[in-house]
Length: 439
Image (cartoon, rainbow, N blue to C red):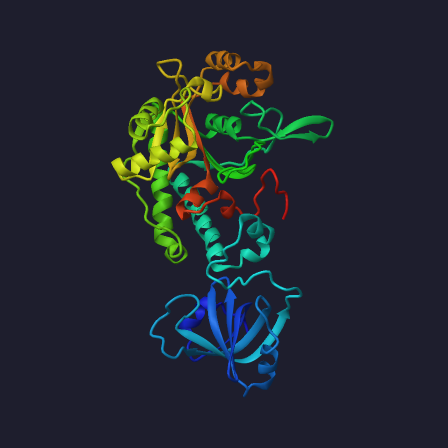
């Protein structure tokens, strides 16, 4: 008999099926044994009675997280009118045969069947192979899967081609010191801080490109919002009239992702905050205006023209109150705060760039890029870098490049904030930070 998924059983009442999965819980009531069996599609209750002695004897020996195979009759669950949720569905299986496929050979450190595991982040991640079996934690990655799917869909709908760029590079993309240096045969190389140079090259060939891929930042952070390897949603588009075109498209992307998560992940969102404030147009204010608002509304003084994490949280609070929006664009960052390839504004101390703040955290950074080769070389020098170190990159702009721009967006930050989680590490299967290189 072919295996049936648990999620298919409500449509198979009166039929015999073969199921296989993990034991979520086992309960003994008098002479009856109840097992909640879990597979990728849901959880269903098994009933094992003494009249099936071989199955009954095996069932007496199973424990939580054993992998078992069960053959039995699908029956309407007594007292149930509908499939209420994955644990107390409308059907149950009257088992006629139970086989143990794989045992748990050590004591479990906690019960994965609990709704809330209530673990510290280190304990959660040290036991990652097991914590992923908890429904609430498992649901995080089903929602993240939808985020990944929706990003690819909306980019293709808007004429973007998906590309994959090298992650071992000859020069640090962003300059500075936050790069990982590696030994590359007899030379030194770096792990890519961004696909920036390659996606700009993509504009020269395909006009619109996007990538979903890892980036690496050698920053010794110990915060809830930073990791040293993350998955970036990148995009670059040519023939723009201004950097407003980029923000317009990024708004469309965010609306698509949030809409799809709301529509397709209702069951997974049930245990998480799920009220989303997504207006038809996101508020856009200059960074300098945001700093004035922080000073006037919240009494927050800043050093120079910059915004810190507390400022991002406060300006998000302001956007929610004044625009009913979880999103806000801060624009026109200083030249000193942006990479050398960023297009200067009419006021040359600022740039045609933005950050998109979402629920109190910087989600995306983007803007228009310099497309004139002479202006680009001058900007590299102005940032105290050597143009010879970027010769392959500069060559792109000697071959004809249109006005263009794009963004880089932290996909895990987006999922973290959609779910209202405290740490970005909860959204990453196996995160890498200053302390963690395993599991």
